[in-house]
Amino acid sequence: MTVAASDALRPAAALRGSLTVPSDKSISHRALICAALANGKSRISLREPGEDVWSTIGALNSLGASLSAVRDGNAVVIEVAGGGSPGAIAQLGPGIADCGNSGTSMRLLTGVAASGSGQATLVGDESLSRRPMARVAEPLRQMGAEIVLTNGRAPIIVRGRRPLRPAHVELQVASAQLVGAMSFAALAANGTTSVTVPGVVRDHTERMLRALGTDIQRSTDTDGLSTITINGPSALRSFDIHVPGDFSSASAWLIAGALHADAAITIDDVGLNPTRTALVKVLQAMGARVRLNEVYSDDTGEPIGAIHVRGGEPLKAVTLTGTDIAPLIDELPLLAVAMAGADGTSVVRGAGELRVKESDRISAIGAAMTSAGAHFEELPDGWRIRRGTPQDAQITTHGDHRIAMALAVAAWAGVARSVELDDPDCVAVSYPSFWSDARSIGALA
Image 1: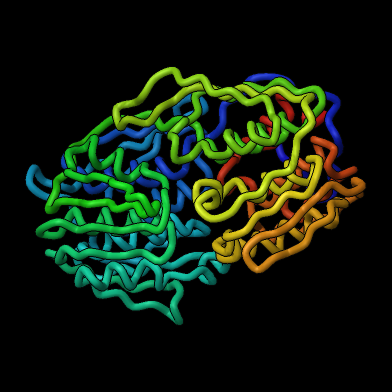
Image 2: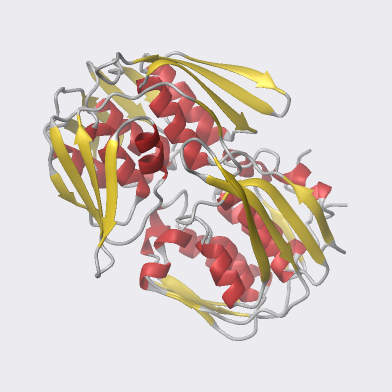
C-alpha cells in the first residue's frame, strides 16, 4: 500500500494493534559486512529491508563479495559466501560501489576498503554526496589508509593497503558510523587500535565483532568519554542471524501512541539495545505510558523483545542537551512532534549533527512543524517548540524519510489538522511497509 502526494493525512479515530517493523538498519549493515569478511558461508534473515540496506548489499557485490537474496515470506534471506580464511579477514577488491542514500554504507565501507585489494570508489546519490566524509577519512589516514575525497565529500577513492598500522584516534563527533569504520579497518592492523568518542554511541559493531571472535572492548571514563579498543589482526567466523526490528522505525508508533487519546500499540520482535532506547526514558519523563518487555538475546548479544505504548495521558515539556543527544539523534524529528503536543516549551540543544543528515533536519522539521501550526524557534544546534493551533500543512520532505514519518505521525495524532507530503515514497529508504503498517493499526482509513 502507498500514499500519494495529493492524499491528505488526518487525525485517526484510534490507533490500536500489534505490528512488526523492518529489521534494524544498523545491525543489518554490520551483519552484511561481517559476513562478507568472514571465513565461510553466512545467512542473514532480514524483515522488509529498506533501500539503505539494499545499497550495502549492492555495494558489497560491486567490490567482489558474493551475496545473493532469497525471499522467504515477508523476510529476505541473504546468503553470503565470505571470502576470509581461517587466519585472516577477506580483502574486498577494486570496483565502484554505489551507496545510494546510505551514509552508514559509505562510512563503514570506507573502513573496510582501507585494507582491501586495489582501488575502490564509493559514490552516492545527490543527498549523500553533500554529506561530510573528512570525518571518516582523517582517522583512517592515521592508520596508513590512502583516501581521496572530492571537496571533503563523496565520491571517495580508497586505495587498499594491508597491513594497516594500529593507531590511537580521538574522534571529534560521537558517531557509531565512525567507530564502525575504524573497527573494521582495525581488523587488518597489527596491534591495538583505540578509538575515543566524546559520548556514548551505539555498540552494535562491538557486540557483533566480539561474538564473531574479535578482541574488542569498550570503557567509559568519569568525563563520559568512551574508548573502544580493537586487537588485530582478527579473523571472523561465519554465522546465521535473524536481525530484529529497528527501534528507530518503532519510534514512529511510540510517538503516535503516546500522543493519541485512544491508542494501544505493541511492536513485537524489536531490538532493545540499551544504546538505542533512550527515547523510551524521554517519553516516560514526559508522562507517556511506554513499557519494554525483553524476551531473549540473540547470538550477538542483542536484546530483543516487545514495546507497548498506551495513549490518553497528557505529555509535558522536556529539555534535551549535551549527552542526551547522541543516543536520540535519529528520533529527534519525531520527538519534535511529541514536544509540539506537550504542555509547555521544550528545548533541544547540542544537536548540530542534524544539519548534515539526509537533509538539514533542524531546518526541515522547523519548517514542517511551523506549517503544522506549532510554535517553533530554530536554534543553531536545535530548537524551542511549544503547542500551537493545528493547521493544514503541505510538507516539503526534502526526500528525507525521517521528516516524512514524523509529519505523518503529527497528522494521525492531531498535532496537525491535516498533512500532505510532497514525497511520501521516501519512507522506503528505511521502512518500505510504513503505510501498510499504518493502515493495520487504524492510522489510515
